[in-house]
Length: 328
Image (cartoon, rainbow, N blue to C red; front, side, top):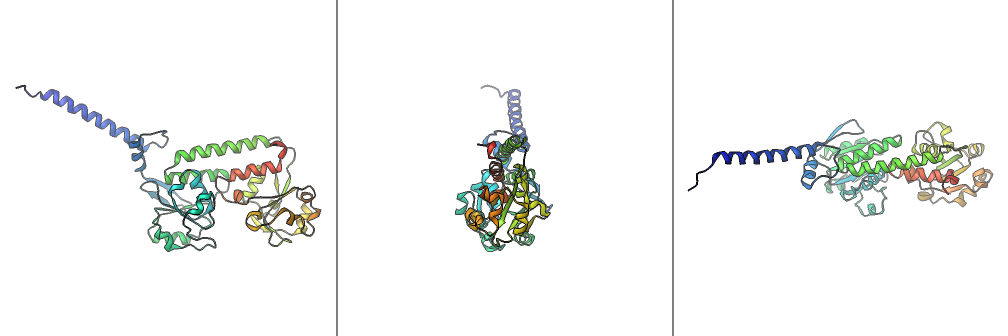
């Protein structure tokens, strides 16, 4: 009978222990490295178990034990961000105004058309994350938190960089950081392309952007501090409304005639049904340069007013309308 070799056995056990510790250390490094590319399935599981800590728009520290898998969005901008970063399958409910992309319309509605949300409906969907924005009252956030629902308040951005940061924040909360980084890179590339195209423009057309023309004698327009104003400027135009020194205001037809815009953009075309012909036929509007030169256009307000990825679509659309010679 052969004797039991304790020395060899100990060496073998030591070797196995080193391999085991090596694997644990590797997984530990993987789980804490935010800049990783492709990882193994086992490493991905470790990564998803890492805590997620952010500071939201109300300056509160929010901690998730893992990426949220059941998300309710209370605003169109957040809904569009979620789908743009490939987190759409994790969305289980949305506000009434969220209507893009098309598959969003199949999701359960939880209210919000007039600021009223169905709290019972939200609770019944059992979300592990609710995304709110500045459009939502802070009292709503408090009500949901009192029901032990995690709410993250996404502050409305004031520029494109702020919008990009929101994309990355939502991605971190839902486990789609790599998708978001790729998206932001592509969006930034499109912005730079527009900047390059208009870098040598000689003139900046004056643009009147109609937000709401229910009262045709004093339509609402967008002024300073809005994305509409920012995007018109970035697209190589001058926003007539910026001269009013307020974010949103009604402007008289006399003032519009006095300023004589080169372009008129009808932002209430989609939701209000306002048409180019209707604008041209308004009393006194036939004297405007934009009307005489047929530079009145229906415009999708959603792509310049919702602070999400489609703002870049809005920027491109504006640039093509303001400076068609650079694109066609």
